[in-house]
Length: 304
Ligand code: KMH
Ligand code: ZN
Image 1 (cartoon, helix red, strand yellow):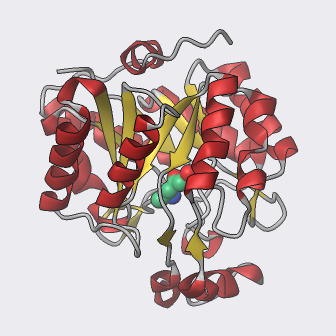
Image 2 (cartoon, protein in one colour):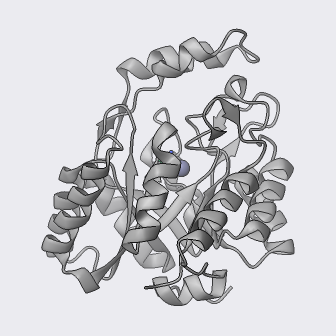
């Protein structure tokens, strides 16, 4: 079995600051949290930016530049930059930073879905920032737009910048979308799939959902033509991670997707979540990949 690649998703756009005081917000906090996650065992860090004064999700390339520079100064970790951004951003805003920073990896969302966040509302008694309540309520009526035209735009960018796409699969139709664009010659295998499970609007995080996605991907692309990882959004994070460790997949954890280290207990950092996966993996006798080993497993050949 391949060594386990752990990705730490540091801050995202779906977790609002009032949900946890431990969410990194400023470029310095995001970079430090990424560096600490890498020290704990993450081979990849998945990066979003936020407005430093109030944590609102941002696509400002200057913020991304500062975050990436700070990480690169201190760590050899693979940097995977979001092109999902937030549901409020256009595809142009979401992808602007990729040609500028030329990261080793970027996310690539493979279908339009509902991406509802309003189920977080009851957990918040007091809002720290004005925008948060509206942002969560309005998500009931937002579509996370990823059309075939958007795929073409993103395929062009990853091809031109030689960035390895992490292909985000929120439901089974997204595997068929990938099959279609691969048949058109826009992307070619081996693919790195990220099964994103538990978003309200996508597939849930039940064990049979993961085995179904994995089986479907094997039938469509052939077992040797893809690597895969899983994100359990919310309560399913650790359970799905355990399944993936056992099945030969890889794992993404972090405050972007889940804020709890155990039932009712907030994770104090991204590194704490990474450490939990390292411990689980040790118990299950699976070795952890370094960033360089992950580069070789994923076929990342970029000169930095
Ligand atoms: N927050 C995840 C559920 C992206 O950044 O491109 C989805 C995500 C998308 O990470
Ligand atoms: Zn993300």
